[in-house]
Length: 306
Ligand code: PSU
Ligand code: MN
Image (cartoon, rainbow, N blue to C red):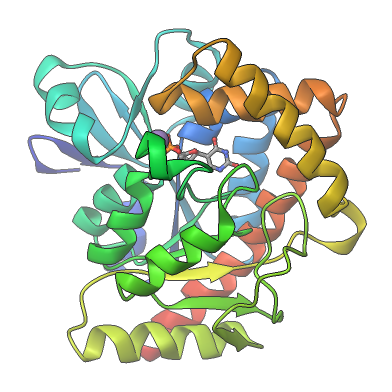
């Protein structure tokens, strides 16, 4: 189904929309740049399955040959996972990638834009981008945060990635009026670990409450998203101090190799995976599954309210 020359919604998802079923958007940067092969394909498929098991419809989003695809076939998921020449698309990249007909994985920011164009309100990811450490000098602040400030999609993640400056990320979200909600937690989870030493402004206990927050925000006409921080399950949570040491080493290595801009996050994730001998990847996979479960429940509750 083509709604604009740029957007293509998979038939199954288009049908689900007509039947007012719960739909959950998923990003593709995590597939193409966030995880190594073959775990990336496995995770991309399992996440969809988890969402289906809960009675919602998954919509993995990516750009293929310059078309924004909402919902991918198995072959397309494999293509995004295996192909070496996939770009990483954030807001700034979209016009060029569409005009030139490139292939690109979508970050949180780009996935939010495309989900909103398609009318999808709930989006599940691993961790959002944020204010990088030392951003005072580098100005490296993920466009994900600005997107949360202006695009009406609820984003479920395991918190900002621990490679970031968590306190500055929290301040930035506050300045731009983005509700930050801890799901069954008072502490801001930070991707690999449940703890960070930083409080969340608000805590909620149920998916239904989150759906009410979404409805209240958008009923008021308040522009922008909602950030739901869902802590990684206890069994997989890594020790905050330990993982921080590893992150410091990875950041040091990035500095040495002069890695900057959009290469930085994928570099750090893969370096940390190497340094933890695969432990961090295991955690990353589990937190994504955990977010998918919550996302499906929120999407179902929101359908009831809307
Ligand atoms: N979550 C993961 N792995 C990832 C990302 C999120 O578990 O690779 C991606 C998201 O797509 C996010 C991006 O938008 O990292 C942030 O990149 P940057 O810091 O360059 O904005
Ligand atoms: Mn950046």
